Length: 116
Image (tube, rainbow, N blue to C red; front, side, top):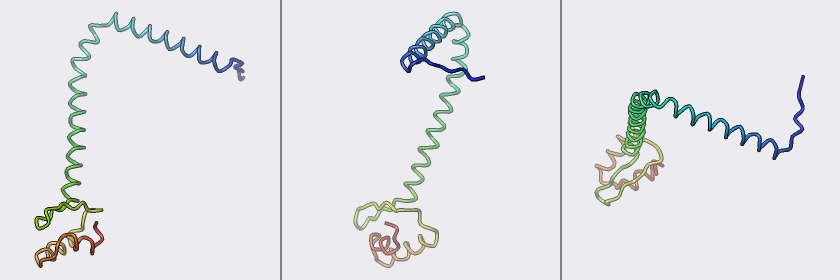
């Protein structure tokens, strides 16, 4: 059977705040009584968590560097770097190299191929 809650919003908010304060006090008491366990657990867990965070950050950084390596082309003739919309396919790289060796600038090649 359903129970009907006739309390106002403010009354519900006050009840929630009181319950949160009660839980916070219980947590404080637990921390004070279990400091030895917390110290041992922290010395084990924190290095593991730190290593995981370090590896995730490194993987993310490596992915960003790979994307920039694949999508940035530096033109030494103009001294400019071009950021491509997408990574060119292998046959597009061949065409870019062929046309650049023939004397065209990267800007005209990449504009013709709709890569920038």
